[in-house]
Length: 374
Ligand code: NDP
Ligand code: GDR
Image (cartoon, rainbow, N blue to C red; front, top):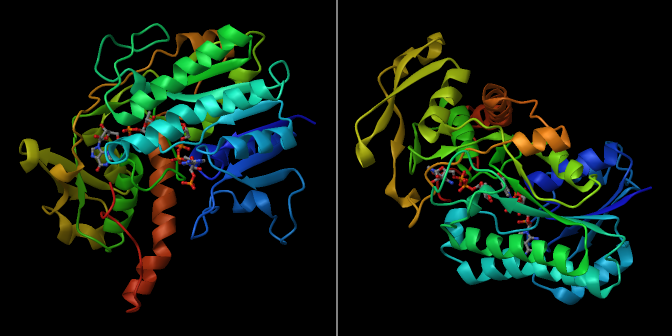
């Protein structure tokens, strides 16, 4: 039985990758942080089955990427065949508020993993996947962005990830380790963190259509992203570690879309046609038509507006990945296109908020959070 260790097991990708590897017959170990509230929602169904029986192939360890000795102990205990380093403070805007922490966890944290493997004499046994990012490209140098496009990071997060990228390359070259970067473009899902723009939109659309709120406030509507589905992307991570030689790969769909268009598509998914008017901070998205009779009163109302709070000090305006290498060498192609991604996310959020909407209608208090976060 192969053994995998995943940092960031409680995150979006950690959850999908765990499922994927368990299906492949792996024993999966995860590193999770101690938290004052439960933080295992995304993986609870993997820890215990429906009858409460513990999954014998899924083990979690308390740990933190800022703690070398803890990582060394876990890796020594687990003796993993594969490590997927997914743990990170992954929010770009928040990284401007906590730059030193991000450098430590997202940057030096990668070094701690690589160094632990080296110190424990596991360089020939353990393969390492580093969660690198399209944010490395930052300020546009050329499009589409490929494995050979120069980097120009535009946030403390991206700069920390740049260190993670190069230290991974360096350990591969210096010590012959099987260590690879997956340069993944944005990937989303119903498990996406609530403060990333796609999930913020799909949650907002669900709450608006269920009568729980009036509109969504967003930042830069012009930003363009190459959005894929996280389910597809975790398979690419695994494929990268199954190659004969360690290499770095861009994982992307090759299609780019504005935030504005994502909003339009998400509303269209629930039968609401939205058109944008105005410019800059005065731009708004207004309901033009609607296929649901009960929603007719909302035609003409504003459902999306701009709030400069969500602007970033430096922005990444355009990301579009070149998936040629991953197609050719990994045989990887996404199963979900943008329409299928939007459908999956909107439908899941509508389902999620139906119960809250019902309780609200009955006069009960519901603690659903929307815009107090980034
Ligand atoms: P999430 O934010 O959903 O998950 C991040 C995970 O890292 C969580 O489990 C979090 O724990 C954990 N974590 C945060 N800080 C620490 C720490 N100090 N020590 C240990 N674990 C920590 O991110 P995603 O799943 O979306 O992304 C996975 C990785 O891929 C990240 O490294 C991200 O930067 C990178 N990436 C993501 C892309 C995307 O579009 N999703 C694209 C390219 C790269 P907790 O639950 O306790 O907060
Ligand atoms: P990103 O994702 O920064 O690309 O990083 P995010 O969804 O946060 O932003 C995408 C784009 O949308 C714009 N935007 C907003 N973003 C947020 N979060 N909230 C808003 O209200 C809003 N309005 C507009 C942003 O300015 C940006 O241009 C994600 C993370 O998963 C990283 O960890 C990962 O490395 C990259 O994707 C690839």
